[in-house]
Length: 244
Image 1 (tube, rainbow, N blue to C red):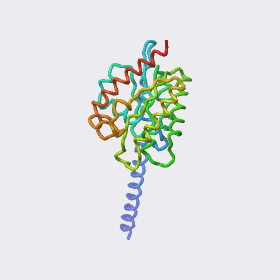
Image 2 (tube, rainbow, N blue to C red; image 1 turned 60 degrees about the vertical axis):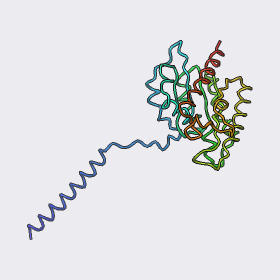
Image 3 (spheres, one colour; image 1 turned 180 degrees about the horizontal axis):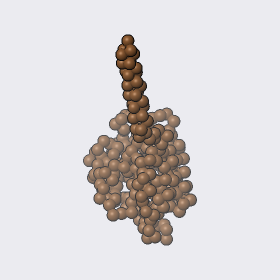
Image 4 (cartoon, one colour; image 1 turned 180 degrees about the vertical axis):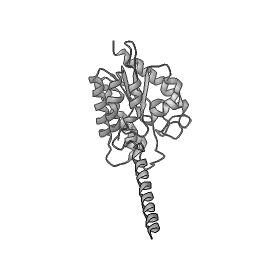
């Protein structure tokens, strides 16, 4: 009888010890950081920004702020950004209010001479029912005003042509982008901001992207980016001249 009680005691003790070890093991496991509050993905470029030295006195730093068009650019043609004071801060899928939230960290704090703002297409493509071109323009205007306040020259982009979004064909993309570009042009003219026209050199007869320049009707291929590089360089030079 005593031996049975002893065996039972040992089994209970062993079970308790194992449970404690399991608990200790779980408590010592590194806790995964929760980024659900980082709606604008500030964490994406945070470390890269922290490692970035301040611009030199003669450096003409340019920040490219946008979504997938800019993020994929440095993947398709990394040579374009190599050995230039260009900082690509594109994040795929982002809408204009997310760009606005990122503006301080990914633009102002980097002290560029120029910011290129490409915004609006993902807002239109989302089809949430709440987005209008006027709402997009409010976010673009806020970014432009912040830049001017911090003595950063503003380049506003006429968005690339899109006939339809492969993932949301119900959207009448072409006409929406044309109307957005008209608003961007009018605002840029009023405030004397430089305009970077990505629409005209890429457009086809349907007001979409020329088939030989795109991978999916929305994002350029390498040939498309090469055309964008030419008009981008011209716009940067024009914006920088306004410093004199």
